[in-house]
Length: 424
Image (cartoon, rainbow, N blue to C red; front, top):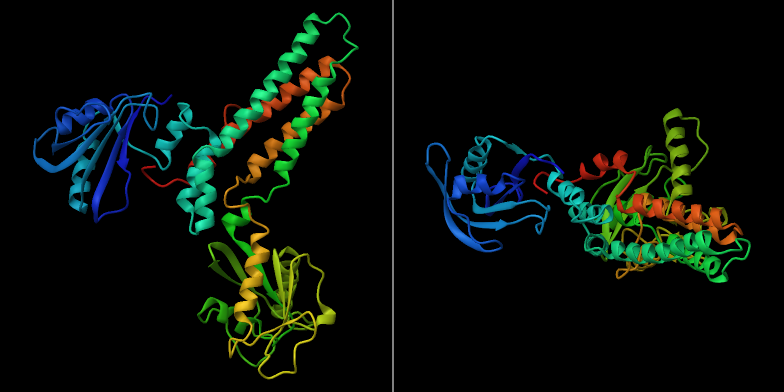
C-alpha cells in the first residue's frame, strides 16, 4: 500500500463550471483541514472557504467532501474540493496543496492504481475503466461499462468457487481415500464441464475490434472508384481522386462510427502488376490489407474476387455502366445510388464480429489467462491420477489469480495504468 498522499485535478481541464480536486492517502484529512478548516462528516458535503495554509489568503468557496478509508474509491482517506473551474482558482488550490509537506502530485492513473492495490477493484475492472475513458462510440461505452462495473469479476468469482470446490474434493481424496486408483466420476466431470464453459467464453467475439474499430477494406483494380466511395462514405475529401490509374499509392484510414459501431474504413492502392517501384509497394500493402480485412468491399471484376468470409461485391460507377451482375450491389458515388444499402450490409457484417451489447467480451490478456485455466482443467479431466488432477487445478487457480491481478501481473500494471489520464 502506497504511503504517500497524492493530489490532482480530477475533472476536465479549466476553464469549466466546476473543478474537482482530489486528495488521497494517509495525510488527506490533515491536508484538507489545513485548507478548508473543519471537514464535514464522512460522506457529507459542506461549503467551506478554501484558504492557503501559510498566508491564509482566500482561494475560493467550495463544496468539500470527506471519505474515510478503506470504504472509499481508493481504499484510503480522501478529501475532494468541488471548486469553481477557473484556471486561476484551480492553479491556486493546487499550489496550496503542493506547499504542504508530504503531499505530491499524482501520476496518471495513480488513484485507480491505488484502488487496485488496496483491493477496491480487480484488474479486469481497472481495464474496464481505462476502456470507458477511451470510449468514443455507444458500443464501446456499453462494453467498457459492463467490465468496469464488475461483470467479468463476478463471473470469475463464480468460476473460482467451482474451482475451489473441485480442488477441495481432489485434496480430500488424496488425504483420506484408501484407494487412490478409484476416482470419483463427479471430479473429472466437474473439471470437464468447467473447461467447456471457459472454452465457450473463448469463442465469443473479442473486444479488440470494438476498441480499434472493425477494419473495412475497400479494394479492387485502379480507377475502380475506391477513393470516390471512401470519400462518399466519409462525407469529406479524404482520398485524392483523379482519372490517372495508380493515384492512390498508400492506404488511407478513416475512423468512422456506423450506428454506434466503430469502423476503420481503409482505401487501398489499385491491385495490378506495375513497374513503378513506389506503386508496387502500395500494391503489396493493399494485398496484405485485403488478407487482414474484417470486412472486404470489392470493386473489381466479380471473377477475380478474393476469397473472404465477409465479402461485399460492388458494381461501382453504376450511373455510367451496364446493370450490375448477379450477387453484386449497384453503387454510384456520384448519385448516391446503393450507398445506404452498402452501409447497411457493412453494419450487419461488422456487428457479427462484435460482442453483444448486453454481453461481456474478453481482451487479449484476459483471454490468454482464461485459456490457461481451460487447458489446465482439460488436462485434469483427462487424467486418472489424483495428484496430477490436484496440480492441474492449482495451475487453473493461478491462471485466475493472474486474470484478476492478484498474482504475477507486475509486468503489465504500468502499461495498463499508463492509459489513464491525470487525476483518475
